[in-house]
Length: 370
Image (cartoon, rainbow, N blue to C red; front, side, top):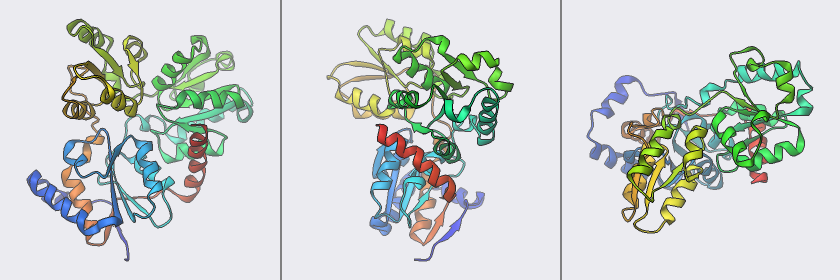
């Protein structure tokens, strides 16, 4: 089949889908999926809204979905219902001949955007004026990042990490060089360091908008873990007061939060871990148990619906959806699927070959460590 590529549907085209009722969108999406058969796989991130997740062949976090896409090389099309960096990772790990589609190109990630390649290059250059950077610093990038940052780490002897293997990756990095530049999420790095018992004086927050990250040459030489000043807007909405409130209102409750939360929240919680950890922990819990969950709202609501024998509460009085993930909706998914069924590849995510090569090296190092 000959492929054509359209960057994004025009406003009028998408609006015609927005005017349709959800039931009709669901029927049309399912019909397009049946027409495509095994040529397509639809991946749904855990934070997706229900109207999208109902069409997913696989649900999971970003790395799990990308790994599954790589394993299932028989599918010609990978429709990734997530955000831009996730689709990039799927493209990095996919096989030749596969096309990765993101239903809405506007679905990004504010945390990933907090570290741009120009800023990382500049930080590396500034560090290089203070110490022999290639011999002393290992760059470690969270998978919630752009492909060019993963490529930067691959090219400079670095590695990627997830929220579930950050400790193993940090240990791996310290076995090779004395310092780590960890980006873009300060809080995952800090919470991991806290669990490892790393002294606070070994940590330094690197502000990319300040010369030398806002620190003296002496402070940089002393620090072992340089944490990029970045954060997840969703997880930073949870506050210590929320944890205290639920513990007072529900004696016996277990609080579980994501390690992208502020350390004050993580320290008060009973458990912290990745999205997959949260899902597995609550799902395996005894009937009748009470849970306060500090992560994205769609995931918590889905847990509550799928675990009716438990009491599951969202750990905030504020609606806390991932606004960029929320851009993937029923109209965009239906539009993308119907175009594929008609032979038109829309919103294809394609990482440049050089970035793909180095990024794959950084990802493979992580997979080997894990």
